[in-house]
Image (spheres, rainbow, N blue to C red):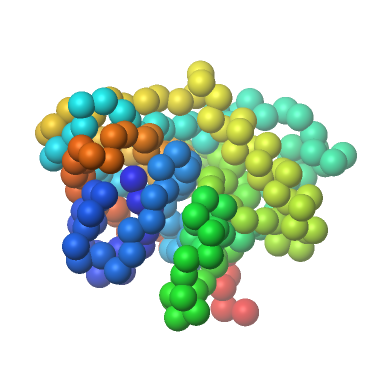
Length: 214
């Protein structure tokens, strides 16, 4: 399943061969939270299955609230509450670079500018805190890159423990709705000779979490 922006608000078709798309990038297996690569976050996503393969192609959902609640290990001498002021850079270019290399043109890179998001976010309705991570999360702003990536990798791995992940096995006609403000998701591999045709819509977000005016 791809995670790309929808600037005109149209429903996105997700499939191995989308004739109208400029570029289709295999993002199978990457946990993401849509909206992190945008200045404005996303709230809910709706995904409906039209055609599904005979096996594989599940979508997994990880509870980022449990990640925050259960994380007790200090990092580099920093207590849990000291991580709350950190800001991370999120980039679609970075996440794709890790799996398929440098595939974007200079013009595309200009259009896909990274966004800064707080590492810790409080859900606006429930008040629960989450770690805002995922495969787009590149580094911690103001930290040495390697140090930040060690923290991010640790949080990503902690967020996807088996006991906090739900795996949905699709049947044609299924509709799944989730809250991007507290859930990470990823699509699993399937036989590319078979079709997996999905349609997704995403609800616009709450507004910028970080002042991007500077």
